[in-house]
Length: 412
Image (cartoon, rainbow, N blue to C red; front, side, top):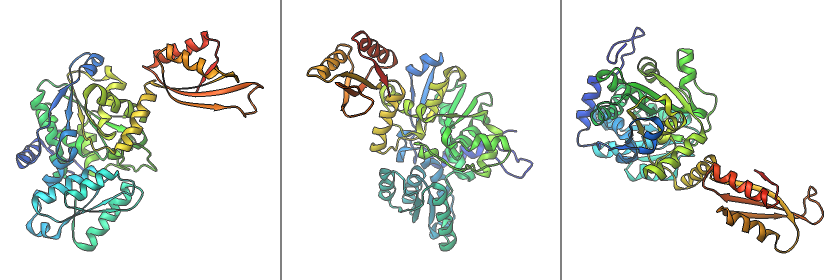
């Protein structure tokens, strides 16, 4: 089945013409974000790999595309009632800016755990941001209740044809910027972006492979696709708050099932490594959700026929989380090493260990002494060190150097 057709269950899929109409509506409102070549990824894949930089979009993510498309099509009466939305941050900012541009009053419900920069940005665009609940699911329920009580129009973050069509304009830009693209890889939460991009791509280039990527710890689509219907997760724990969605929508489920070739998952370690990769190699600040497509390509480069376009969907990351994720990514990449070793309890022993580490080029970040543990022999000290290394091979070199010097080191 192709985009634009009516499925047997009565759900109409968004078609290429719908996305084209959204693109005309968004002309002059959104940025045509750049497509940046990644030589480091291309070397792994064996062909061109491009990054579609929606982290450089207005509000820092693709969400303004769908939000503006939805709000711009409201009637005068609906606009007068105001709008309400629920979001962990990016949809909130998209709705807030779209409402500001169109002169519509906006209220946004956000989980208590929403990153502070996203909350501040939402309020900065003029929306009323209300925090409450432990998850996006609770925020959605609060927004729905507010809509019913006040008459405000509920703006769903993904499960609406206008939202899907607006997000699909990313796909049109990809096809224009990379006419020979063979694979498009897209982060996937509720499925609005991957649905829209798939609709756009299928209309013009049905031969292109479309791959959705979810965080393994918040992956509702694989189970839903296997069951043949949207199935809610019982729990989620992921750093990628932007794609932590408990269940697909009925509409996005239909699009993904009928138009997307594959949905795969990536681990938290893969996300943190990909974020570090984007910082170091692409010079891009990206949030964990926004880097899911890059994580998938890094994890299994042979699975993506080139030319590949990986959509970098957003860059709204809390600096505190950025610090933690960078540290996690360095540890996952073997660039942090924790060691325990026993040395004689006499002057100069610690200095001797540090001298060996200096000789092998390891940067010492932390040092701790333990003298009183019962596992230690009389006259022994246990030294715990955290090192910064150049990677797994260098970490092995550190262990070998300590072994040659007569120290037995254990990791962890």
